[in-house]
Length: 413
Image (tube, rainbow, N blue to C red; front, side):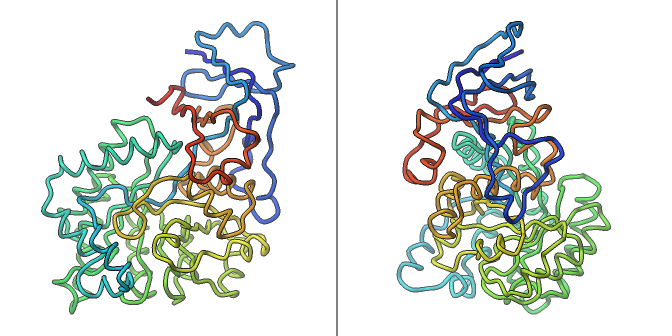
């Protein structure tokens, strides 16, 4: 089916197919066309341009007039934990009362709390809870999302999560990439036997995942009290042997060398980056590894924000993602992420939109098909309500300015 969108006030993120990410000063440039049209052919972008150049012979089956509205590519959220069971509101109250995230984790809360709940919950119920979140983020403009396991911490639990992710991918038009995060924390029974749990990951979990092809990436929480740099490298090496590309959690609370480990193993992305040293920023220069910031996690936990200005000034690219999870970021709202990046990290609206679209797609390995208005890419589009300019998207941070979301050529209801 051919769909024509006309009278677009401004069509944002118009890119040549060769542009797969933007870095440094380029992040401040957001190419656009005013008074534009766009043609969708089935689920792909077929054409676009100025209304003055609108072809007369298009004969679309459907025409959408969006006068006064802005159109941009859907958000690409490259770091989430959407698949989980239950909630952790009590820990939220504990933090209000003065306990830190790390203190809660040490007394059996945090990731271990979610793991206990997930292993006690049926696969069907986990799917039913998770699909509500997927539908929510789609309505908020997300057209591609990465989802991690990591709340199983057992062979059965991790595989159960990955099967749920696969089922969500099969049942919804949103593009979903799956990440195996068995190295999210050490289960209580392995607290004094770290090697035993790593052996379980490498010798039992990974062979099964390699056989079933349930994951695209492997992730490790490289952090004090979690996985050391040496352990992280061991797990990344094993994942690579089973065809999984590394993406790692690093520098959330401490700088312990995880970024250098990620670069060493050609990680697609290094995520969190709340604590960054100048030498780590230098190490990321001229690499294929995408730095990913998670500002709504910083907002929720009250921890530092990733130093976006320092990284961009040094010529790095930067992506933005939600970190949607039950403990540190119970929100998948990329609109809030973009606004928070502008307000707290001092990114310009252009930089934030680039980070949440084309660079987010790169951090999932899908920037050849997502993240920009490019002929041949997926027709994943946000249509705003009538707004004065795209600056209003981060400015009016508490308002829902989305009128419609098109995913793979169809309006998502």
